Length: 190
Image (tube, rainbow, N blue to C red):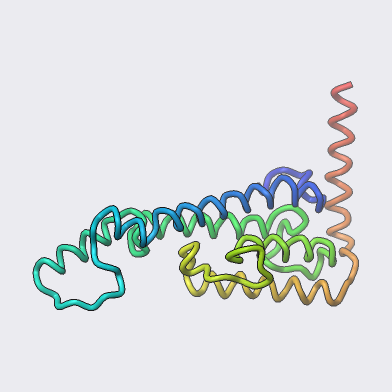
């Protein structure tokens, strides 16, 4: 994601980087939705996770068995995968025209890139084609801190859109360099 110089151009970044990451996030959401708590309860014939029962030996064994289920929220596999998915989203926010910055830092990139990033973040985190962050803690298994980070990135994008400044000189230079690399590759092929 971060190594391709042509991703500095907003349309290419959106098409080739953000769409791929969005597809990964949506696939993880679908996996969690299908194999999540409901599937765990029906396939394992277990009690619902939220029920309070006395902690007899059988209940302790059932509880331990639930946590061994790969899609249980406390299972290490599930935690690791959700961390990797969050890492992809974060990397997307540090690539292309946002390369070399902290994730969600839109002050140099201009309103166009901030708008693309905001739409991407909302599409990744909303339950449906909504306008706000959905329950990413349940649907994507993100932590509360990860959810707060994404909400902060969306707020920062909204601020950059409202200010409506053009991209900085360094951002424009990065985009021009990526266009120049493309022209050089075309000439060398000819």
